[in-house]
Image (cartoon, rainbow, N blue to C red; front, side, top):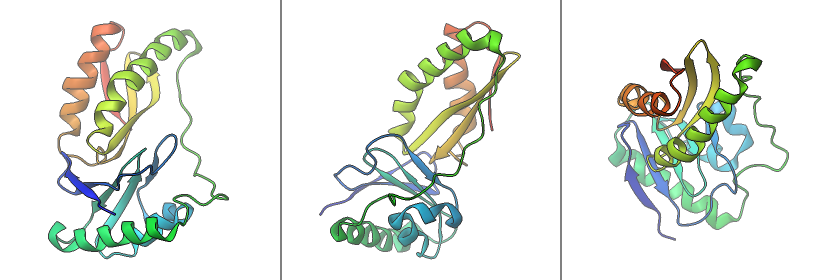
Length: 185
């Protein structure tokens, strides 16, 4: 098994591509050890000293470090991912209950605007940030402000503010004049 690695815009996060499916649908963000209980692979990765976050996409795993250097962490991470896939164990436990995410918030009168925002995020934003090992999801809309949750390599990324302000905010403003600002939650 050959696992490729890619740098992400976040220097604390590396993207690992095992060359096979990781999740069949959606994404899974495990920002700490407590969230890892739903995945045997995430538990293995959190056993490596210095690992502070794990994120699964359709065909990739991103790992965020809290300490150490990549040249020391990378071999252990590659080994854990390879051992997991070779073992045949599931990525996510069948009985795992994903932690309930925060509820979306917006006024009923804004439902049409919110539908357009979600479509733009789904079709234009999420595919781009997945390429960098992250994910961005809609959380709310109020008085012209769009609230987004940043996950994986996007969470804590030094360039995330620029991505929000110059990329996503400009895109949404172009298509939806009512949008005045985009903020992370």
